[in-house]
Length: 303
Image 1 (spheres, rainbow, N blue to C red):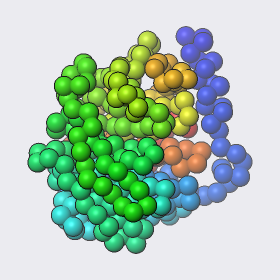
Image 2 (spheres, helix red, strand yellow):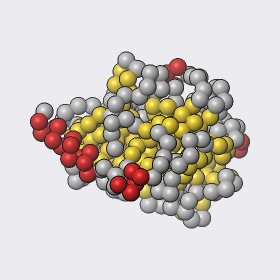
Image 3 (cartoon, one colour):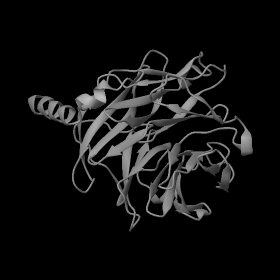
């Protein structure tokens, strides 16, 4: 316990923001929507502080800045056939990609919200989250429990193709969710069995991340160097962000800290970095459709 506590202190101290960053005013809560029936899910925050949040219930995408407490509508619910939305990320060209959940589609927009492309996986797919490595995007399918891949270049978004299917993953997955990459491997969350898979991008070899001192699985994943954050359902309505330190080849992880829990009924899903702090989405999925306002808040007790 002493070694774990010391490691926790060192990690948190290393991540402490500078005095300059602390001096900049930023709200601790953001109102994304006051429309009844929303259920927020995905989040992306740019280095400049632009925030995007999706709604899995309606497909709406909201946008704002981390310096203002209210977001506004960026992409209307249902537009372009996007009746649900989960993962959201920006590519190196500033374009916005949105996973369409049960629509089985992946959408690409420019910074003004103009549709650039739509790619469809097989019928019945649930495109949940995705990550970008090199010239491709890798997408988790929580229905078929496989990973899709599509080329992603300056020219646009290519077709989605199955990259790793369920039968190639052991132990057999039941709900693939969060996914991140360091450019060499994918780390993929599996909530049915509470494991994180490690997938080699070159060989497609799938192994289970070794976590000798606990459980590391979750919904939203965030990878920063060798620090891996996951939004973890601890049971009994308690959700925390869990921090683990990875070894050099990302084959093993040591749990070092948990955040404070989300508010009762908040059901945090995904996380994003906003300089010296973490933000998570209060989806209210456990009590869907929940009660407005639908919000994003600072992750308590963890940087």
